[in-house]
Amino acid sequence: MALSGLEIYKLLPRTNCKECGYPTCLAFAMKLAAKQAKLSLCPTVSEESKARLSAAATPPIRLITLAADGRKLEVGNETVLFRHEKTFFHPVGLLVRVPDTLSAAEITALAKAVADYKVDYVGMALTLDGLAVDAVSGDADKFAAAVAAVRGVCTMPLVLLTEDPTVMAAGLAKTAGVTPLLYAATAANWEELARLAKSAKAPLAVRADTLAGLAELTDKLTGAGVEDLVLDPALRAFNGSLATLTQLRRLALKKNFRPVGYPIITFPYLGEADPAMEGLLAAQQIAKYAGMVVLGRFDPATVYPLLVLRANIYTDPQKPIQVEPGIYPINKPGPDTPVLVTTNFSITYFAVANEMESSGLPAWLLVADAEGMSVLTAWAAGKFDAEKIAKTVKGTGIAEKVGHRKVVIPGHVAVLLGELEEELPGWQIKVGPREAVDLPRYLKTAW
Image 1: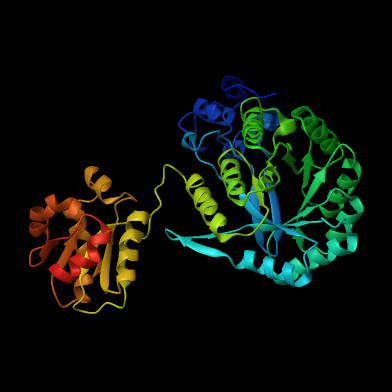
Image 2 (image 1 turned 135 degrees about the horizontal axis):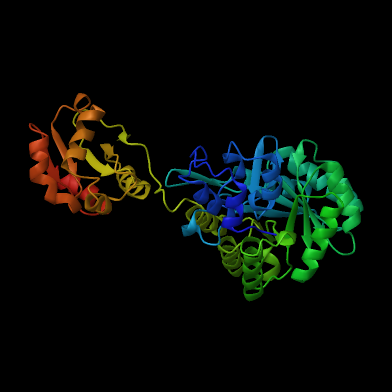
């Protein structure tokens, strides 16, 4: 049973030593009760108190790890319902289904395409996380061959999809060096799959049609010694999936109901046959509250928006995405090349950089440290003023790379022109356009 903040406080040393990083033991106790801190942060808590506080200190959703040749997929361990409360820590794993009924060449090509897929999004490399090999054939040899074919061309984490213990054992035999997820234990087969999961030291997915059925199965499996579990509530449509996944998250976080305190796996292709609707359902499940989403097909047009959505949800809302301040050369600039100034907010940087790169025009892009804020936001907050711009010009050494003394500031901060001329004597300050898309035309006509 979960303890309240005051109950936890009574079990702490109450010395207010601050070594845990919090100003008082009471503040630390409240964080423990909210599952937003770890008991290990307290260096002086007694062993007796540790034992009593274990329920309060244990994360409400267990951390599950899939591994393959040094690459890991970690899901779970979340502590809040909404990212603005704190942040989400472990991004949803996006995997692609590989039916074992495909030919060996088709399996190899699909696995390689998924493994090689990578796109750049505001400085982040977005990739898929794994493959789910599906024993559609029901044949142990075919399933084993499909797993071996996947393993032969990529080193991604795996999910093995079959309820047949014999077929699962055949697939497991081809996963040396891998910690896959076994899917799925049901009321009919849980004992056999529990034995396989224990022998392979692999996490096990549990499927049931009701929350009570899920809780009953997880109790049986933990009693059998299988601690690493993943839940599949088996509700595939939009409404049922949203309601049930939300209820599971609330039960784990708000009620500390341990039998459902595990990550959730979903299969949007089982709920929607149409590829567009499958992508929409996957997006809903990424937002609320899947831990792993298995896509029925590999389609870059569907995968890319899902990866972007995930990146946006799982970035810390209190820490803007930003690039390193400094000089960024674009299109092989030289001593006569224009010098442009912007902030280190990633979207601002990439908007400017992409427009310049696509235009073919060379430029020196000076990125000022504005604490990850956009131009107008940083200016309003006093983080992108004449002093900061002048410091960037002087500190980066751009004067040594160009033979002129001209710098272009964003049109949104034209008001800084006079101050900047005082801060940078000898430099000509030019006011550029407000929008990045207008930069190429501006440089052709006004530089």
